[in-house]
Image (cartoon, rainbow, N blue to C red; front, side, top):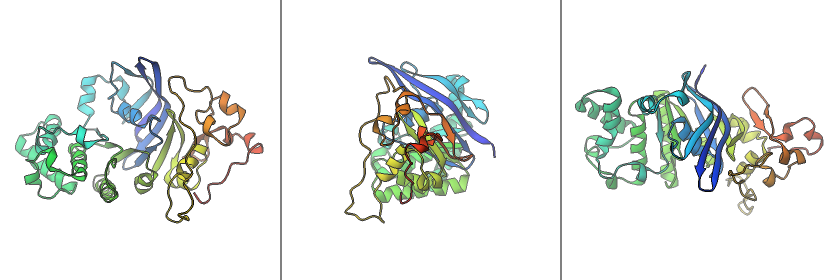
Length: 337
């Protein structure tokens, strides 16, 4: 199956008073129809900037895509005008932002906000748009949709607001949905309901999903494959089972080791990753994770590692995968992670 979305060697920078921030540094990934890709990593690693770049929502006065291609069904989004991108947003590719409270307009009814995209992209009557809005509220599990359309943001709970955001994103039947931290600020029960909703909608519509998160539990629940980002780069990518049961980058192992587990002795403390991510005003010459890595070699601090293809789907950027490095430090296995 061919790729619906292909991101190749994406570079994004921001101009600030302190200098140039190299937020995304050569990110590549692909997405097929009906597939779910999770992009994971610590805060500040470039996940949300990558997602906004795909939508071409980087603020032009400060940010810039300096290199790379974003191909949607073979069409390079980087070459489109803003007017052409407005036609694609919502109809071909949609995004759910982190905070529903700030993404929805509190002065306009929920129905008007859902219908706005339908009327713009489909050029249909308000009566037809209203019928589609009701259908979409039913799809995302909101009861009494006819009455709910007339209500305003303050009349909904946090979980309901997130469902409304999903309805707005899906109402024009896009091929790709990008969800940026969709369960942030929700309690665990509502989180589980939202994740089940994503799975149900994908099964019914066949939509492709990119989910941005730092929660490995969300990844395990939804994803088919994972891209692990650190300091603006993808350091490891592969199918969900290989990432969880056979991680090969020390950062990926650190993320998994810092997760609480139900089958572990509760008296055992979590193992956080020591240190902090590097300053992206001046990224290190070598591997960005070297300063925090227990297995770092001298070459890690001096040179960027190449991408090693462990299988045709599992890739890692780490000098420890070099055949010569295995004679210096045996890489710990992932058994038990």
